[in-house]
View 1: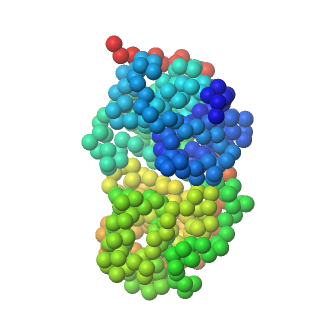
View 2 (view 1 turned 135 degrees about the vertical axis):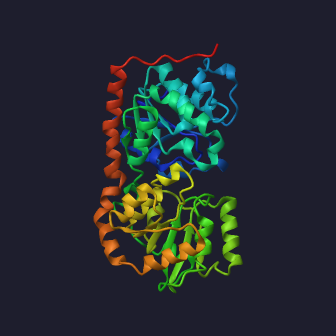
View 3 (view 1 turned 60 degrees about the horizontal axis):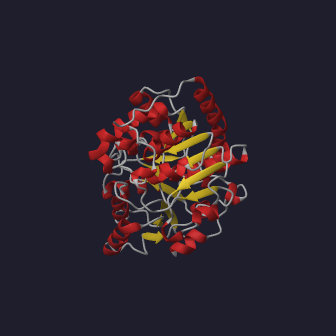
Length: 409
């Protein structure tokens, strides 16, 4: 890819596997007159799944080598303060400066400093897409005051702010005194499925489950602070005889711990089954093979309390009733809409009781309601909001004077 290629929008990412929200957004903008380049780190092992799933989206992989400070413009105070916390910031800044554009989208707080610097350097419109309440994550508790201060200093430079749900939009507006952010839900696209995904039996086959077993599906990363150990252990307390838990997604070392625990309890291959991660372009064909989806997230921090994880909308589009905890947004989308049940799932015993109650509930009614709503929660509906957000941010940029950056002495 030539560094002098002209893109109207540059979208910044620091995750080697690019969030589908970013890729779907880039596709929508590109197809509607805003050619978009996604800048991301190199994928481990030369992984090309993002490029294969989104061949129509331009992705530039940054070099992995360290960038000396002398190769960058003088770093403003509010941006240099974040450098220790965000190790990709220098490389991302240098890459963003190499691609002049009309609009820069910073996807979450680790990208915001580079986005501010690139937007000021090129006179570009800056959009901040806050994918979560980043400083409020439990594993960043020690850094929360510094992260909050950085976000407070940088967010006024954005000409438009976007986030993933109403609760987080309200918190951002109250915390930083900014206009209430636009909300774009993390809905999946039906582009890869010719409109509607279909069940070809691949999930059941991969899990080794017969047709008379009902599948409760957890899909997504297997990491701590999601009550996944309680979920696995909860299957030992389950009384409903024909239900099996299938866990599908990136495993890592914690996934190995979950499998070992399932094996120690005599559940592995009986009540608990593990299926590897699948490409985004195939995901819903797997999801639709389940009978229900589960989101057992605990209220371990404000971000989790208010989250709307990708799997929520993937379950809805695939037509699955949902069992979820009592998060603010999870109640809004699950119990309040009649597509499933919210329950306490703090312990393994809680999980067993919740799953039993769920499968004894009005599953047919929940499925009917999911079918009524599924078209609403696709990217084909939700992604169109970007076509209003970007021009609005450009107009705001034109309206106001660019905020000066305070440079280090």
